[in-house]
Image 1 (cartoon, helix red, strand yellow):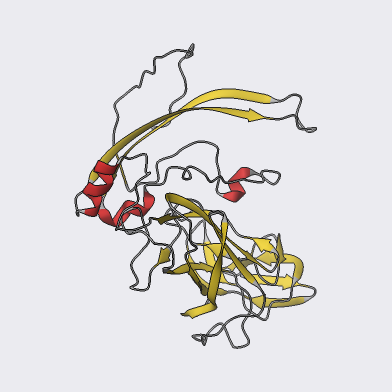
Image 2: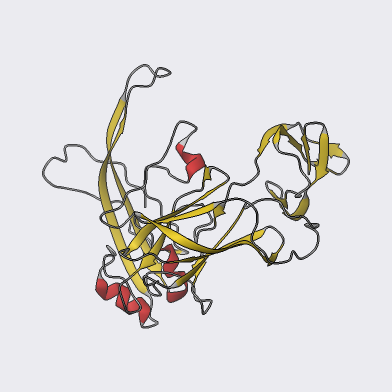
Length: 300
């Protein structure tokens, strides 16, 4: 994989390659600016694709690997934050991701610890957290941000985002409670949350009715509005509790800029089941109630 910016080409460090995907580390020596990327395999080189390289643009890792939902974050004891292992105000949180920026040494070697240049802001709920460290984790391409959970923040799905180099990251969520091991506002219900916390598995079905309202766009003939239904039926284990993601907690919201396509922001407008054990709800679902005049489309 070769990245060329402003006439300078760098060879990306390949981490893995499939027939449809190549994961690589962009070397710190790559210039900033607009450029191209190509992939060569068995003596053949692909067509070039555009790439934009900036100084810093942090991306939060999430449990579903899609950039949304429960963030990959740990406490001071290296325990993963989920609805059954919550943070508390004042706790140390370690947020994992990539994209804080270049280092002075080679990315082919384990990097040394140390804050990277530039201002970092971590937004948790409606507050700005105190940042204690922002730099490499000891592994190439893997960054960590150590921060303190702000006071007055609580909920199973509290939004978290990072601003680095003037760029806002994807928005994920954290589970925060005033005390105890679990949070209390998950739509799964406290009985199922407690069941997971006790080491048992929990099955949960969720049906949601919603409305998608797209305002007028000069590129479209008219505005679009539709009602929809979404349903998921999931089996969670204590180890997969981080995939039990259902929006954001009351009192918070996530605003998504869809001007470049919502899919690029990890937001689809519907609800799909990302749990590892999806349950079969049967051949058909029927929804009946006041205001429901047609058979909705159901994803299950």
